[in-house]
Length: 231
Image (cartoon, rainbow, N blue to C red):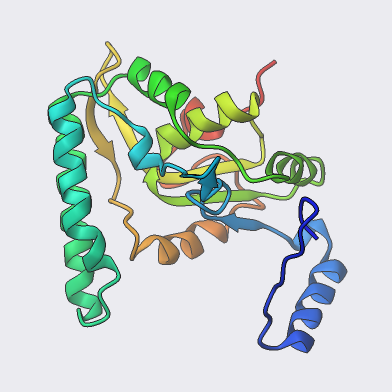
C-alpha cells in the first residue's frame, strides 16, 4: 500500500528475489552500494498531473531560440531512441549525435550558474516520496550512492540543493558535467559524453572503487562533485 492506495509489483522469480534480499542482509552495509538513475527514478514521473521534467528539460537558456532548437532535436531523436528497427550500433551513433548537438547549443546559446539556479527554482521536478529519508539512512550507514545519469550533473546537484536542502557525503553524481570560465559562463563539457545507451556500462566501471575511494569519479574532484555536507 502506497499513500493509501494498493500497488502491485510483478516478480518473475520470487525465490531468487528472496535469495538476493537475504544476501544483501547478510553482507550488511560494508558490502552494499547503491546505483540509481535520476530522471523519473529518484524524481517523480508525474507531478500534479503534469509530466515531471528531466535534468535536460529543466535547463532554460536566456535566448528562447536555443530552447526551441533543443526541443526540435528532442522531437526528432527521441522516437529514434525507442525505434526497435534500428540496430544498436546505429542507434548509439544517433544518440551520440543528439547529445553532441544538444551540448553544442547549450554552449552557443549560453548557460551560467545563475541560469541553472533560476531554472531549477522554476522547474516542475520533485523527488519521489521517501528518497530523502533513504539517502539519509544510507549516509548514516556509510553506504556509497552513485547517481548515474545521461542528463546534466550541474542540474542534478542543484536539484539536490534546492529540493532536499542539504547534501550527502556518501553521494556521487556521475553525469555530463559543465566547465565554466571565471565569470561563470559555460565553456565546454568535461570528459566523455554520457548518453542513454552508454550510461550503464559507465555506471559499472565507476561503482567498483566507491567503497574505498570517494575522491575522484570520472575526473570529478571539485567541490560540486563531492557534494560535501555544508557546515
